[in-house]
Structure formats: structure tokens, C-alpha cells
Length: 384
Image (cartoon, rainbow, N blue to C red):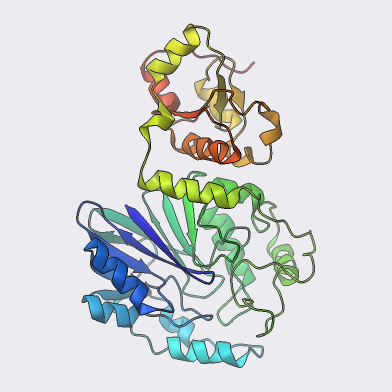
């Protein structure tokens, strides 16, 4: 899977293509047709679908126009019809009314249902209904990525006070649908106004103000009421997305870790072109440790995984979602050799990227993770 993110002043859309077939899907297109046309032509892609993750209220969708140009189909969740019938209980700015009215006219060629599979070449996406921002909001899951639309953003969630919004539905979507998924999922949202590309679900569990504390539905509604800026046309991008409130939220506004942007760019580069020089095989690591080399093993799995499957003797355990907040526990010497370890090599790959972004010069990821280490029969220890 190749992911090309397009950023129009904080509104994010994606062209996702299958490397084997050059088939592509465009997700949440907006603003300028030419940007999409140029990229598709440059890469020689065949666009199969143009998908909106929800009925947008902050920009006009380009889905039908792009679908017509490429001979593709537009796609949305089946709840789009119900969303288009929603009337706001409270007055909303005229510019939002106009955008909503325009998007109501957009045609939908393929209607999607919750749990349905959408194939793009050899890449299979799963549709997950996640209402809360709108009635028809979905996330699209495939190959360890989640395209979250306006449901889950970097640092918070989408607004719930626009037509079709519901804080109760958002609470269910976040905590009952997304929260149980693996920490390793990489998140690609539809909005970000702080220059971030993506995040991971594990990172968001710890750092996202909407996820890092379990609240009752009523508490969640009160929290969101204090989190979102006033709904008006003044002050810039207030309709959706991550934007700092004029006043701190009831529990305090939390800024993202300042290294997050660097981490995102490093992650994106890694996903497109994995670098063999950042990996170390179980055999090579075992030989270096046996030779007495001073290597810090950073095991980023959860504690219960160490208890059940064991770990490499001397390893320091910091779960991947806590690496940013616990960076001070690692050596001050940025030349210290570090090998990041997890079960399969995915989470530790993210941790290794973060450490390199932080400034550590000799960081490697254990290839095949502890699964590979155990396959080779290398020694393990278990917590007392």
C-alpha cells in the first residue's frame, strides 16, 4: 500500500494505491482537482473509488467530479441519506449551511455497510461505522492503517455539535469501536492544523484528551462542550479538526509532544521505503549480546505480554505508547546502541523511529520481534 497525503490548509485527503496493480482509491477529496489529477497521472494509477468518510460540513466534496474524470465510482456509508435529512437544532453559520446544502447534491454510486470489505487491487479495506461527528461517519481499515475521517483526530476527536453530531454516539465510536483495536494501527485523519501527518492508536490512547480518560457518556458530553471552540465563522478553522480552544478545556488543554511532527515524517518515510540498515536479526543480536556488547534492549510491549511470553534478559520495558512521556528514563548518551523490541516488529519499529527523531544515532529494530527470537530458541527470562 502506498499512501499519498494531500494537505489543503489543514484539510487532509489521501490517494491510496495498491503497489501490485496500481489501482487506487481517493479518500475525502476537496479544494483543488488539479492536485489529484496530477498525482494520478504521474504515478499511472487507475482510480477505482472516490470515497467520503462522511458528509462534510466544512468543505465541499470533489468526489463526483473526480469519479467522472477517472471513470470511477463514488462511495459512502448507507447512512448518508439519513445524514442529508438532518436539520440542526441550533443555528449554525451561514457558510456551513451553504456547504451542507452543496454536499447534499453529491451523488453516491456505491453504498457501503458496516463491516463490508472494499477491495482496491490486492488491498482489502474494512468499513467501520463510527457515528458521532455525523450520522454517516466511517473509518476505513486496511493493512495496519485507519483512515479516521473526522472521528478520531490527532489529539482529540471531531466536533459533535454540528448537524448529525452526537456526543453519545462519538463516545461509543471511540471507546467501543476504535479503542479495542491494536496500538499498532496508524491513524490518518481528515484534519490536522498543527502540521502532523499521522499518529498511532497507541500514542492516542495516552496523549489524546478524548481518549486518555474513561468518562461516562454524560461526563464526555460535558468535556466536549468545554473543549470545542465556539461555533462561528470567526477565528479560522473552527468547524472541525484540531485547533486550540480560546480557553483551556475543563481538564486542561494538552499540547502534542513537540517531536510528534518529526516522528510522523519519519514514520511516513519508513512506511514507503523500509531501510534494512535500521533492522537487526535475532541471530545478529544474540551474537552481539553473547560477545558482551553493551546494548540497551528496549521492550515496548505491555507488561502482561512479558509475563506470558518472556523477554530478553536485561531489557528495559516501556510500552510503546509511553515512550514519548518516559524518554528521560533512557540514556542521556545519544550514541548508546539501542535495539527496540516488540512481539512482531511493528510497534518497536515505531519506537525506533521516534528515538531516531529524538536524536539517538544507533537505534535498530529487532526483525521479526520476539516471535523471531523465540523461533530461534534464544534464552528468555520472566518477571518475578
